Image (cartoon, rainbow, N blue to C red):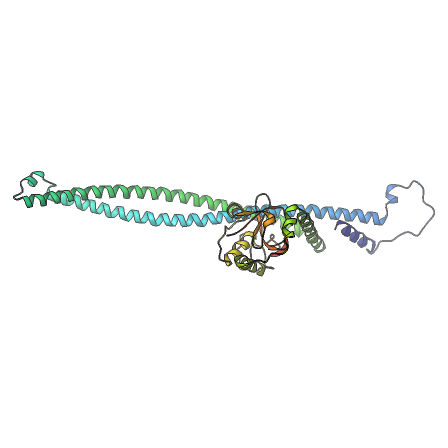
Length: 364
């Protein structure tokens, strides 16, 4: 690739207007200066090398920025998931708190009514109990007294339990709200980091001329091909491809059909479709279309889903990339994945080994 770029640059210089060459003259001095001996083609080659090195440096920096943005996107998505869970938890606790408060108010009202009734009747008089005129009357008074005492004890127990529930729910709701606020701050911090990374990457790319942007795109493709070739040469990949093509079936086939139907749609961080996706948003929705719920982020997909060896990978499995599990694609067979690459790119098919593979997980 670099050779081709150098040759192209050299041809461009040679064919540029205004470049002239001296007619052959006398035999040159046997010890010419270095500058005099440098040929136009050598100068063009040096310029081409410099241009290639410059693009290599820009490519490396841009890719690093997008990688960091993708890591921050995973943090953003994870915070969003926690935010939804905490909001649900707070809403549930609020309902329980309201119910406990109502019960407490009811019990207090009942306790007050009981106390007032006892006050009006002068309370329980044991002397009257023993002075009952008949055995039946005596037994009836004993039963009534017991019921009254039991009702009072139950009332006190219920009031104590309701008060404890109320205090527990109040404390839990306060803690959940604090966690909710913390998740909101984490989400905003991740959003800010993402935007900063993307803005810096876009500024770098915007300084390139259209021709340089195309060469940068070709350079990215070449790097991906080289990585894929190295991966295919690994023992695990050789065992995988040595099995031959394995057709996707059932839920995996449905997930792949959904994912490949999104090819050409833009990558947008935090997006879950239907018009744009980020990497884990695509795999999430693809498997949801197959009727299976999986975690939202690539990191949680890596952490929670069952792991399989690369050599045993089959269509529909998710390939997790980089040591921080910040990228994911869906294996579709024949050593390829479908994935949402990064901002400025669209959902596409590429080699499963075009990025550093962390491992493979299997939904369901």
